[in-house]
Structures are given as C-alpha cells and as structure tokens.
Length: 424
Ligand code: IMP
Image (cartoon, rainbow, N blue to C red; front, side, top):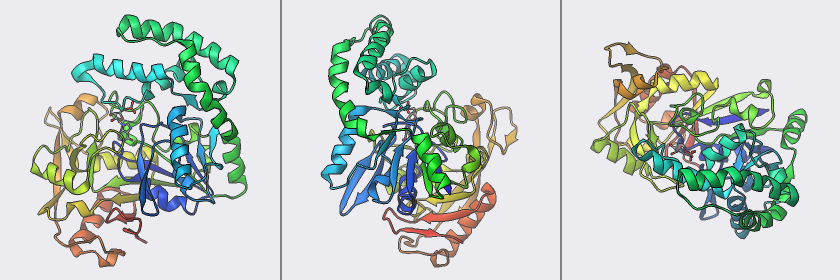
C-alpha cells in the first residue's frame, strides 16, 4: 500500500499534521524532494519540535524514516536535527538516507544568497538554504552525493573540481568570498561518520517493503504551485513536489501508488514572490493571517494571504491525480461575514477562464471571479464529525467539493492532533 501526501498551493497547507496522523500507522515514511527549505512542527509530549529534513516517521518506533534520492541534504542540518531528536529521547537509529541524495555544499548557500541579492526586486524569495544551486549541480551532473561524502578521497577530489568553477563565480560574478578545499573538508567530513550507518539503497528498501505488503507513506514538501514544471515558474522551488515526483525521488514505480491525498487550506497563502490571483491586501487578509498564524516556520516571514482558489485546486487535482482532498484550517475563517471562493479568472483581454492559464502573464494580470458563501460565527474547534458542524460550514464544504471535483475526506478544525475529522 502506498499513500502520497502532497501540498496543493505554495506550501504551508498543513501537510505535516496529516502526515503525522498517517505516519502513526505506516511502516515506512519517505521524503522524495526538497531539503531543509521545508519545515513542520510535530508535537512530542508537551513540546513542539521543528523538523526540516527528517521525515515525521521518526516520531513512531514502528516506522522507518527514509530520505530518498530526490532530497537534497545539508549534512550539518541533518546531524543537528538528529542530535535534537536524540536529546528529546527519540532514537534516529532507524533513519535511512539514500546514497544517491545530493549534498548541499557551503557554496550552494552563498550562491543562493548572492543570486537573490543580484536579482533585487525580481528575486524569487528563496529560503536561502542553497536548494536551487544544489539541484542545478545535480542537473549539470557535477553534484556531490552522500556516497561521495563517505569517501574522503573522492569527496576531496570532487570539492576541488567544484571549487574551480564555484570560486570563480563567487568572486568574479558576485564579488563574494571564496572557499578552500580544506575548510570544506574540515567542516563536512566529520558529518560523514555520523551519516555512514544510515546510508542505504533506499529504492531497494522501498520496493522490498512494497513486496512485503507494508504501508509506505510519501511525505511531500512545498506544494504543486512551487513545482519546477507544474508551478508558477520561475517563482518555484527546484524540485518536484507533485505526486509524480515521489516516483523519481524514491525509485518506486507509478503503478505502485494507491492513494494520493492533496492538502489544502480553506484559504490560500504564499511566501516569496510571484503571482497570487486571490491575494488580499486589506483587513480581511490581515484577519486571516493573524487568525491562522500565517508566519513561516523556516524564516518567520509573514505569509501573503488570500481566498481559496478553486481554479488552482482543480488544476492540482488533475496534475497530481488526487484521490482525496484534505481541507485544513477552516477555524480561522470564523467571524468573517462572507466566504469567497475563486471559480474563474477574468483575463486582461476580457476573456473569463475557468482553467489554470498556461501563460504566466495571464496569471499575473488576471482578476479573480468569486462565488460567495455565508460565513459562520460558531466555535467549530470542538466538532469531531461532519454532522456536528454548523449548517453553513457543511454547505461550504459540500460546495467546495462540487467546485473542485474531488472528494473531501478530512477536515482540520484546529491545530491540535485530535482537531480533525474524517468524512465518509
Ligand atoms: P527555495 O526552495 O528556497 O529555492 O525557494 C523557492 C521558492 O519556494 C520561494 O518562493 C520559497 O519561499 C518557496 N518555498 C520553499 N520551501 C517552502 C516551504 O516549505 N513552504 C512554502 N514555501 C516554500
């Protein structure tokens, strides 16, 4: 059995809590893309722990957490996260890391920052974690992988070759500091010994697990609109958050996937730059941002906020092949007199479209066309079944389901682990 969980908008849809709930019953929990640009909080006892790289499966003794080949790994962040978890009494012994995963190097981080600075007001708004430059090297076939890090001689040779080019770019293009082979080896090689026992052929491990009838959960990071191909390019991340990405980033074939859950919020948020048709610049936007606590877990940035966009949602249902939809964070909408859902875009040329436009400029210039629904004033955070919800909320969910053309099977009504309901 294989379940993939993917974000639908620009990340931060509350994937973490759904993954956490499902991880409790999974045998393997695997990440397939992204790196420590992701971030979600898990609850351990009375503490909140922030995970950026290690899959949520680490919280459950039965689950094997896997970092797949499609992930980019900053070894320092990985080791710090392992130490933090072990300090909390959570063993990382079961953690498996693909020998093919690429390593984020110190120069990737510098290049990320320098490139953003150079772009000025056209910046992507990256997390400055070196994600893009690391994937660039992977695509250019000059990247350094986990298996290279574990062989001192190979690692040194590869760093030397990389620095010939990277130092020239850092110095001559960006006027930034350069790196020496020794300083990188000194900083990174000690991590190798900590990572070595965890290195594995994870594609083999995952396929064996499937053959044995185990339940694998794929944990997507970021979201569909941040996908390198399917997202709002160039304002995207450099990996493939869409469900299809889990095959490439893990070595499991597409026919193995049984269930694809898309995670939405009842409104939309975005961090970083790029088009966002339903963005709100008024007090309703501030109201939703504050009520939903929409501030980044990685960077603390206030998130841009807007109404639910069903044009995006239908697009996401299609490009991910979703079998189920989860709607998180309905509770922050409490107190708003009307709830709006964008059902079409009015383009600059006067045409109204109901499908996600292929042309980037159409997305930049369009105006959202809304359907309006009655709001609710009741506290819904204690509701645990669909029937307990006020009639206005029930009908809002049914309308959303009709508009996005995919079954909504789970609702989040508050941040706590149990503030969630399944809908049959
Ligand atoms: P990068 O992934 O750091 O290269 O950033 C590229 C874009 O993706 C920027 O707009 C980031 O704000 C966005 N991004 C990356 N990771 C996340 C995430 O986990 N949640 C929301 N946005 C993200």
